[in-house]
Structures are given as structure tokens and as C-alpha cells.
Length: 246
Image (tube, rainbow, N blue to C red; front, side, top):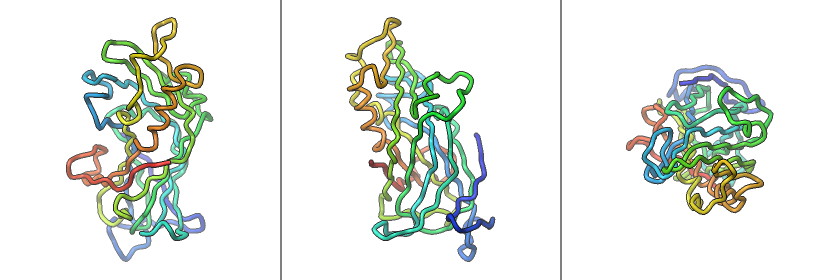
């Protein structure tokens, strides 16, 4: 599992490392994990057969992730943010883990922002990652290859499911999940046009209606969970902290 250590701080504040869960300390160490998943394995699976859609790569280019402090987002609250996350393939089983110092307490909203380009192409990545924020590559159950390349760049606001969620107050992590089954919901792969090599391509020039469906599903398919065991998976004991909307 890739692991980075960041200081998540207010713009004018500093960070001091403290023991997790210490209520008298200004900051505590907490984990933020990032990964993709499928909430419907009949519709979609990741890197293994079984779904009508099998995703082999899920390249996401993320800007900063920000969090609004406080239990009431109708007020002008302070916001804290991570550094730029950058490009990564989130289709694998290991979540990206960011260990950071945060102010323990309540947060009412998180925001995830995608960004286009400004990256170097990793080995094995499709060339589309150079100028798209989301690139999903895979095959249908019948073996037909597909590729989705999106310039999605709208901020995804994740509002707290129960008014506010706690972070840094115990040893559980926050898990940011991209639900790829939700992202492809409603796409008519069977009716999509194929290119000369019989690949299905959804981008700004091909199957644009299907691309619009995909992009409309992005925000609702971004969720934040309390990851009790901090393992990067959504387990039965984990609860939803926030859900995305545009």
C-alpha cells in the first residue's frame, strides 16, 4: 500500500504531531485512504471476471481534497486541504493511504476535485491520461474492450450523511471511495459504436451521449466512509460519512 504523510492544516496555521485521540492536543494523526470499488459486482468487477463490465485500470487525476470544519455548513467555516494528490490507478486492491495531522473534531463537508493533464504518463497507462482527468479501461463480459476518457473537472461536494462526521477523534480512518459500478450505471455498452478494432470508446468525440451519462454519475458515485479497521475496504462495520453531489 502506498503511503504518504501530509500536514493537513489551516492556511495560516501550523501542525504539530500528537498522539491520535488525545482531546487536549491541537492536532492528531489520522489516515485518509483513497480507492475505487464496485457496489454491484454483478454489474462491474475490478480486475477479475464476473461482472458484465470488468475494469482493468481506473486512472484518476485528483487535485486537492478539502474538508470543512464544524457541524454546520451553513456557517462560514474554516476549510483544510491536502496537497495535490495527482495521477494514480485506483483499480487495485491496495488503497492510497495519506497519514496526516488533522484537527480532531467534526467536519460537515468534503470536496474532491479532479484535474486534467499536467502529469507524466506512467508505464502501462493509456496516453489519454495526459489530457483527461478520468480514464477507465476494461472489457465487457464477452471480451469486447472499452475505454472511457473524461475531462470531468467539476468539484464533487460530499455532504455529511448525518449532519457532520468526526475525524481524528479515534483510530478509525476516512475512506474516500469511487464507486465504478455507479459510474457506468445506465450506459448502453451493447448499443455503443465500435471503432475499426471493435473497441468501444467513450470520449469527447465518440459515444458522447454515453459519456454524458458517465459524467452525470461521477459525483453520486463518490462516497466517504468511516473505515473502522483502516484497511481501505468498505466492511460491514463501516458507516457512510458523506456522499457526493455536484
